[in-house]
Image 1 (cartoon, rainbow, N blue to C red):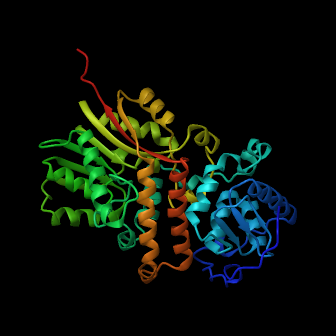
Image 2 (cartoon, one colour; image 1 turned 180 degrees about the horizontal axis):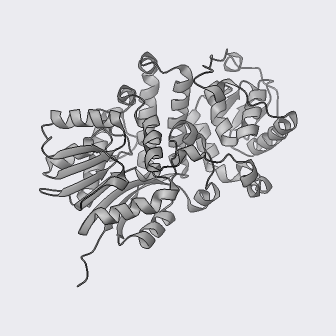
Image 3 (cartoon, helix red, strand yellow; image 1 turned 180 degrees about the vertical axis):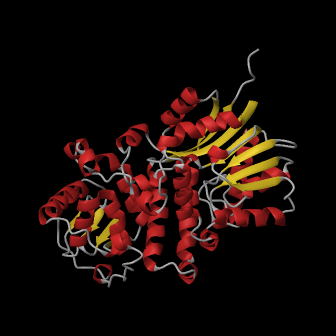
Length: 424
């Protein structure tokens, strides 16, 4: 049922100006045909009618059964973008200001929880015809991976410092309880890091390989235990700041940080730790990544891996699809499923899964704290030269990710893999 309501002040607001040079696909409407736009309108409204949302359109009508509010400001642009580019268009529509939600996480959590059923079954079967395909340029070849990583992690160390805690740790924390507050975030990140180091039995004299340096906090804590750490990254910005932090901690004699692809790693190690790195590898190269872990690990060694996962059926259904996250946030990124990790380790390595713990609720809290800090410090982000379209994009990214974990669509796993002694 749709009933007329007075237009809210938000629905009448003046949209922000989108920089056409920087954001060409956001500044320009896709120009979908009238037929396609009309068909999209029907499909979208029918999908929304079933959801526990309240979607209000500029003419005062609304859809949904009640719940978090989505305020559509420009119906034509919204339907054109969704009709032409699906979920990519949905995200671009938010970046452009075609719609807003007072409780963005709440609205996106409803959508994430119903993602598999949003598109009618007949259209799902034709996904290969209408879904955007990942571009060849985003393949994570050795040269492609460098470009993909740079697009995200080399944005600005100052940008990440705006919303991360003082440890500069950019992965799921581990809290003692919920809800958490900002003052607990650094301690929760240390708890997560220490848990991984404990799983890998990192201590005095351990030869540790870290794949994915971040800004160096794990390497610093491992070296403080007496380990000798070789850490690999493809981000120059991260490498430079991580080296500075290592020197500041007085641990330069125990930590080396190399600008090197994981495929270029050499030597053998007693332990390997890799935190939320596999998501950047790309499905095509997952076998190489896990085979590298196996090849670099000494017999009797241990691998502690933290990985974001998605349901296996959704992983298969979305295989090859080009997503908003890939286009704007993590080019070349791809989330595995637990089943995929099991298959990869059994088929391509001598590693055994000794332990696996799911920490999805902890990631939802981590993302909430990041998002709140990013929002509170929007002026600082603007001062760094990031415009409103970027700030809307980053807000959508953090809220979209949080909603994925709150709905259960996403999870994060801490794995312990072991490698037995060679048989004689």
